[in-house]
Image (cartoon, rainbow, N blue to C red; front, side, top):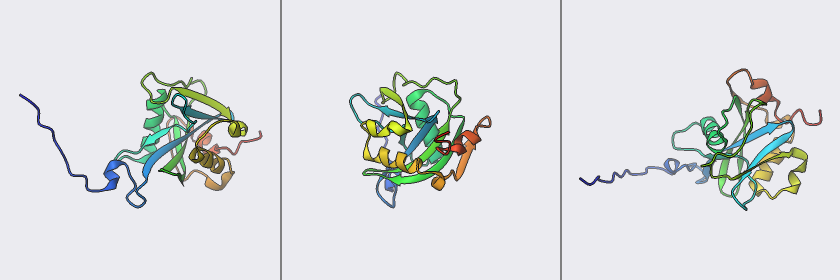
Length: 171
């Protein structure tokens, strides 16, 4: 017996992962920082991006950030903090700083959409091919304590690492 396809009516752009106010796709964007280096990802030959992914309908943005990092790298976050929202050409980014244990090796998962990972010193970001949205987020994040975390989650007491942000720059 053949299965019948099921359909449902989409009532709002939000069901498509779009912000109903702006019509832009919502993206949970991850700042993963280790020893003054930032993790960037890219598809083969594409520009370098911050890890992250689309926010699913009815999904909390912090959960989307943690999920996207795990889907791309297999890494479990130990803490996460919301930093700010940033608009780019096509996305409304919900930017989170995520902490992971220092002994965790980050690499792309075999089935991840990103094939390359790069840890780059924050001072060398001008030397990589990144999207304007990625550059804007990194510039804002490195601008000091202006956007300190407002909402945080921690598993295992890593909240001080998350709250530190880029404030340790230069130490």
